[in-house]
Image (cartoon, helix red, strand yellow):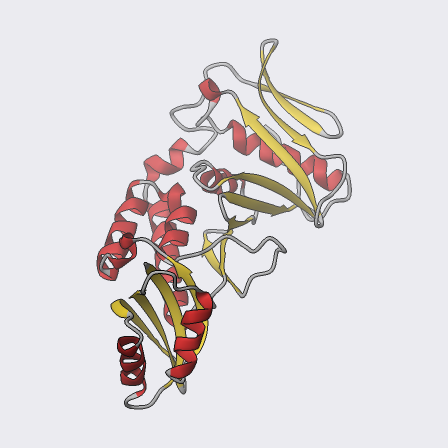
Amino acid sequence: MLWKMRINLADRPGSLSVVARCCGDAGVNIVGMQVFPGLGSVTDELVVDTPDGWELADLRALAAEAGADLVDAHRCRDEVLLDQATRHVEAARTILDDPARFPEVVAELLDAEPEPIDGTTADSLDLLVGDVVVQVHRAAPFTATEHARGATIAALVSDVLRRDASYAARVSPDGPGAPTVTPELVSDTHEVSVVVGSVVVGRAALGETTVDGARPLVLEIDSSWRRRGLGTRLLREAARLSAALGDAELGLVTTADNRAVLPLVLGSGLRGRIRLSGAELHVRVPVRDFTPTRG
């Protein structure tokens, strides 16, 4: 049974050997390891193969016997044994191929976990891509090394989006995929629709009340009209409607593998925040100071 456990140790010679000895005495095999140095202490991430029937309490007792503080532990699969340098190269290749996958890639790379049911987490990590803040959360605190790794990957995404003119064109309302027929935006107080002729091909609907300080937003576009900038136009107009209602933020929830979210928020020019929560991406866009732009 494989577990991934993080422990804090005093930064002094021999402390890790005590952990190794205690693991050996308990029949626990250390099969993988990462070291995150700090000031006065070291965070070690161990992948361990434990005897059958071991639970979290057993790992906590093992850490205490070794003179370490258990930060976090959870069961894991064999994939975690992949070399870390290889994981980072593969992550970079994925991002170069499709920058919009950044939220899911960085979450997997940093072992981000779903938020607990009560909504609390031990730590959050904010990564800036253009004007968009991508947030990931997990139970174990992010180390300084992981902050640096995340920032480096985020910088790569920003560089790719800035340099790849073809990608920018794909998410631009004026790009090569723009429709020959000009869609019309039709709005009321809580909804805006994209109409082509007499057919509605997209809509953005605001909730009647705010939730956690944000107005819920449902945004839908017909599959045959996607990648034409309509989502960006809908998001901008929805922000204008939300601001008119006196809201501070818009809130949008979608699946974690939705690759359209990052270019959608970036293309809107709004300073959004994207965070991973289990299988969902939560997007919050400030609208209080929004200046409407039409067309």
